[in-house]
Image (cartoon, rainbow, N blue to C red; front, side):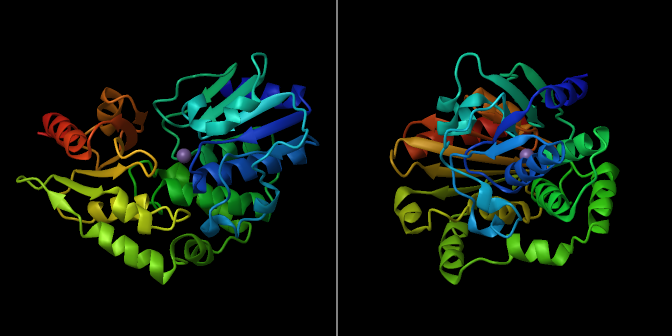
Length: 320
Ligand SMILES: [Mn+2]
């Protein structure tokens, strides 16, 4: 139903502003770039505007040079927001919108707040890239290599390289078709996951050594205080690395990462990952955040040790 509305919205309008969530990553960026490709193929005017710059590991993606962080007098009919569960998650970009701005919301987060005039939300999709791919099919727009590369980066990152539970036959069928367009998995993987600097890896090693676990072994957590964060390269997203390290541990059901905010020590960002048993979206929601069943986050005001104690006890309550 909403897919049809989405198609209709594209057909009826001429110019589109495309944006996504803050801390832009593979699915956000890949979806934006591929969606822009689809719109251009349909003769539309397109402008990609994000709060954050393109992270270095994604700069190999064709079209990233056209991604802007400032709106240069671009008038648009529709603001398309991709992979973004809430308008607040678009960061500074939401200030560009007026009361009458027509918004198209394309997303796969179960916690999506349906903030737009058209909400195409598919919690079962592995990634927003998978949804954009569906749009290509629906609108019979042929994929070119650049679109395929962007979509591949999107599904690769959001499925944890095809290993999370959101990976289905559909994901692989889509990947198979993308490879027909000349995508070389090894090359994409190397750009995204094997291009870290030695210095970043040293700081990461320090973060990993903060690992702790509960007596039953199902819960693993990491703590990153301000002083460690200050040594870290602000352009390097270590969060995923830390969380996936935790998930490698036998018996780990839930992995949590507690991080003091650089600007405010008493604001704690909590990232949660689950292997499936425990719905971490529920836990994040309880503390005012959200996300997916197996990946979620929230920000809690308070002292690090207190916030950590509260969240850990909530997790244990749900997990055991
Ligand atoms: Mn996503």
